[in-house]
Length: 384
Ligand code: G3H
Ligand code: 13P
Ligand code: ZN
Image 1 (spheres, rainbow, N blue to C red):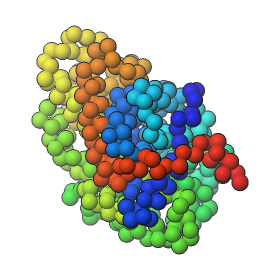
Image 2: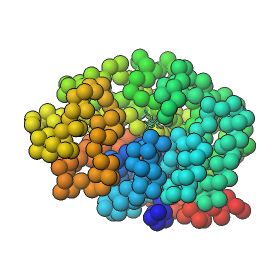
Image 3: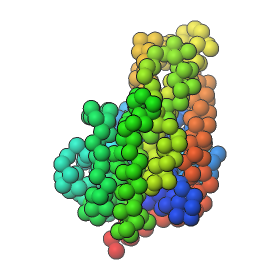
């Protein structure tokens, strides 16, 4: 395990967003899913362009793809060092289970999510509480989830949204002591969020009511609301994928103005995965089309990627076409390798999208306002 000291708990980052919001500038911190090095570099570059604190998160799937938390941590720290990234960053486990949350706590993450949302309410609180005890002892922040988002969540599929009851949110925080809570308010994971951007399912008043309750109980400086499934699914990126031979159908995201409404209502962390997947896929498809026959120049690496893209025209998850090569290649700087050219384009695509998103989320310019409390200091605060 490498040095964790460059990584922060989510708490000081989310608190900076809460403070800005209280001062009349509604803000939320962007949390971006990562699966490979150039993706991490793109996220970091976008954060720097906006002087924003940020959360890099890896799902259980991402941990499996890269071979575990130590590998992910090494990759992210490498990207931070290679780009001289000095702005505050948290490395967070996304949608963890009990085992993974404990492993990530022990192996280099600075924050974990325990997604016990499939359990009964009381059991959800109990398991969240257990992880809080485990992770707070090392100063890590913990995110729980209450309610069920429609769509695919790791390996679980929910047909419909089960909305969080806002009146129980302060109770959840009080009992579990979680630092952050994902509340189901009608967003969903993936590129198909429903017609009209799933607007008919959105219930921002759940966020508003939850936040009001937190303020009433004096929780809002230490506990924070999270919005999952928040990708905007830009139609122009979907159109580009399809113009380059892809067949992504029924794509719709959450309109930016609804995300911003949710930030005004009290959201302080916004999860984005799908938008980055779409940008990466558009870039790969275009690069292969712009460079016909390039796959023969490195048949062992490029050919399998091209073949996987040709076979799965509706692919948007880069792991679908990148799993065909050695994950180790994707964990390091592609400079000097056959992937360098396409990865430069991927990095830029991600950087410009992240830069734009954090501007819209209101966290641009907040990096200097984050109180840089270390994980060991956080552990001492929790213990007191
Ligand atoms: O929760 C969903 C995120 O988009 C992570 O997705 O588990 O496929 O990496 P993943
Ligand atoms: P999207 O699929 O909308 O990007 O949501 C990502 C997410 O919630 C990760 O936990
Ligand atoms: Zn999620």
